[in-house]
Image (cartoon, rainbow, N blue to C red; front, side):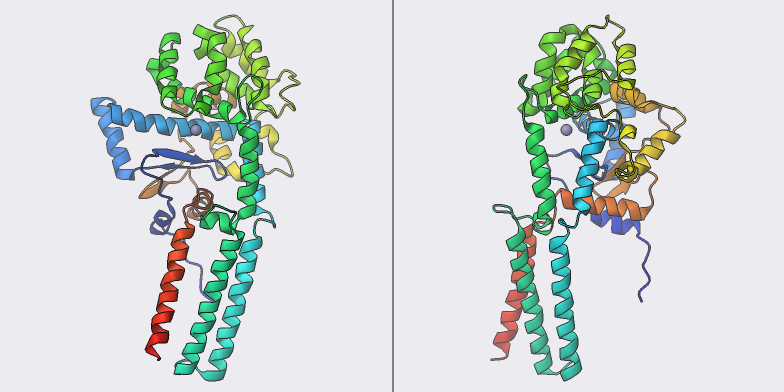
Length: 407
Ligand SMILES: [Zn+2]
């Protein structure tokens, strides 16, 4: 038996998913992996340059993209809605229904191997006839495999990931449809999540932490983002005006503790605006600990920790939770959600950042980083069906060439 070799750095590098060039960073919620679309060296060069020469426009853009994704990471680790949502997705990923195609492929491969074994036993290994017969078996396996994948991929989709796990993507698409549905007030749940991340990135920068600067920054950032990102802003700003910077992140933090975050928004905004100016932080923190009843928002889920049960295990974000819990800064979920700059106080940021040529694990064993990266890779659909087809065609051409040579 082959001994399982330890996973090395160079193996991990191969697992890094390459993002399209126009995408600066991406957080994958089911695995907690954040992909940064630049090399590790370029990233640290940029950090050094920023420290000595200040922030130029290009590095500000990269930084903002990373801060935006960090906002999603904090939302996921700290709020009940996000943790429950992402745990559910991991559950779907692991379900029997989702591994159906995998199991079929496995059986197909086992049958082909058995046939090859029989051929070898009967006719030996190197004889011309045996080799031709073995080629036929391999060709039939490859054809069947391509047919199975083509059949299981949903109509109009050509990615390998969708062909292998159609159930997961169908369920996720259903969830995304629900989350993009707008309430009567024009706010969707994804609108709350994305609007929150835009504000989180804005408030990470010291210059934006006053009323007017925050408004200007939000308007500027939202002007080149899709409409979804501004749904929450368009609802909050006309009502909160110069208090927007004070209520925006507490509103997102509270909303994401309800079953229907978007439906809870109007009630929660009224609740926050009723608090005297300057006292929102303390008042909202108190509400975060004891959520007010909001019928439209549905069940009160509380923070992420409150969602852990015998059925819903913390495994998904286990290492991240441990880092937050053990950090000497002792930051609580509400502070992390509403004061982005508080992250600076943490000794070790538990972010699982990966760069295009390497990775920086959050104090995780290599095996676990690898597993998370494989799943992130799969969910972000890097394996294109087109590539598989190309391989198949190459095999077919090779087979035809050999067939011709025997004429
Ligand atoms: Zn986002």
